[in-house]
Amino acid sequence: AYILGGLAHSRRVNTDASTFDQSAYLHYAGQMRATGYGYTGDRNRMPLYPFLQSLVCAPGLDNDKMFERAKQFNIALSLVILIALYPILRRVLPPLPAVALILILAFMVFIFKAAYVQCDLVYYLLGFCSFLSMLSILESPDWRRGMLAGALLGLTQLTKASALPGLVFF
Image (cartoon, rainbow, N blue to C red):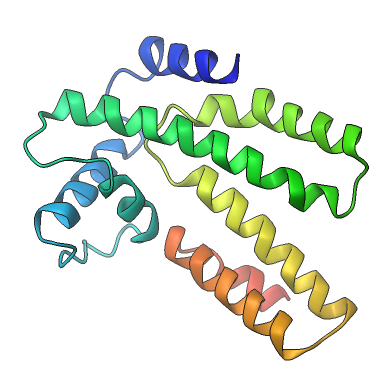
């Protein structure tokens, strides 16, 4: 149901790549792929999400086909993110509430973002994991947890340039 809803949203609502910076992400991903990942972008967007999109952006595709492929990839990526959230949530919740929370996230938040070529869903996952790792440092500080938190914060920053306020707050 989630995949069908995401695909329907992508076909009926998100039909224009020029909205919501989607074309900029597509251009960035295409340039990365075309230059053998030598393209560093315009520094307006961070490189992690365009790198992921570049894995499915084949050279020679026209803009419409690339847009469709990127939307389908993002829907699949959102499903992987939801599945990855389950073991994370199971560390603090029993099975049924963890599943309920994932279903709420899937059908109240993710399904409306999945059909867009944007970094938000990857950022949500990495930001949440960064937050949890910083909390674990407060609970029991050691260098391994610090390295994990630093790596997760770095990946979060590489997804969207707004992880630094969270680090400052921490």
